[in-house]
Amino acid sequence: MADSIFHSLTAAARNDEPVALGIITGANGSSPQKIGAKALFYPDRKIKGTLGGGCLEAEAQRLALNSLKTGKPETFELVLDHDFGWDDGLICGGKVLGVLIPNAQTLGEQFWNELAQRDAKKTWGVKNDFSIVRLESAFNLQPSTFNLADWLYTETITPPCALWIAGSGHIAQAVAPLALSLDFAVSIFDDRPELANYEFFPKAVSIHTGNWGEILSVPMPSAPTLGLIVTRGHNHDALVLESWIRRPFGFLGMIGSKRKWRMISEKFQHAKIATAEELARVACPVGIKIESKSVPEIAVSIVAQFIDKRAEILRARV
Figure 1 (tube, one colour):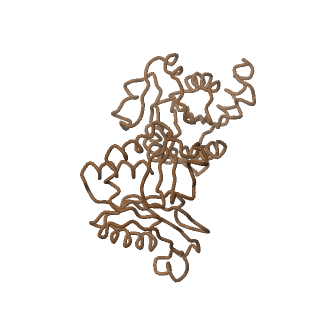
Figure 2 (cartoon, rainbow, N blue to C red):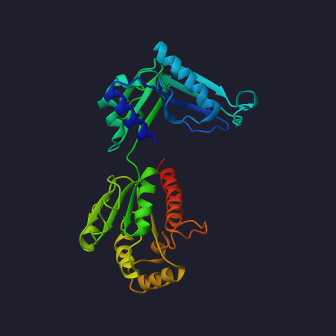
């Protein structure tokens, strides 16, 4: 993830550790990584992140180590054809362009830490002279003051999509760390503090405990938010759903059988709690069909569906 690269750059700046920053700035045809992929290259040949692996990354590393010796940044262009990638099996047929910035840590701990803290929309980029610049709203500037042709690369960082999980049992405990590793900002909601605590969840998870009336009224973040309902029983699932179905979630998923969903749907429509259109936004049973049986497998099926729905939401916002 980009923010892990920024955290590593923050650490390199703090420790005054030389590092070259590599970025994929362009791609044509098939390529192993997309524009914006990043890697850090260290003098001891350690690599954090990836530009695509295989021969591509080996060549980028060679160039990066040389740039650390000379102190000179450079661009690169690699064609992933039969001649270049046969030995490593990387013959995608595409072309990638990139930039390598030696001693990126010299911009300072504060610069990289502000990008690592994805608390607001932030824009930065690499100019044609290889200088790295932070801009607050680069794409909103007047044409007279911002010319895309002056830049090798620009990137706008936004807060991660939020995943709210109602329940703190085995499924929630398996989903939360997986979702965190896949760039969701995870929050847990439950009325059982004996389970909803940092003995069972990573420190990066936001935990809300108390009576359901209080915790279900927590304000939603400005970032797109997806909801997962996996409480300890049908009644609690229905209680959460009655609240969350009225809130602007981009997607809602609930654990359970088709029979359970039919019963809840009929009850909600009969009591005029929700319309058929509102209920159609809920996936129950949640998760993609992968013959999952164990808790970790169920977590994978759930998170896979949320990744897919997140992509749909973000595409619609562009």
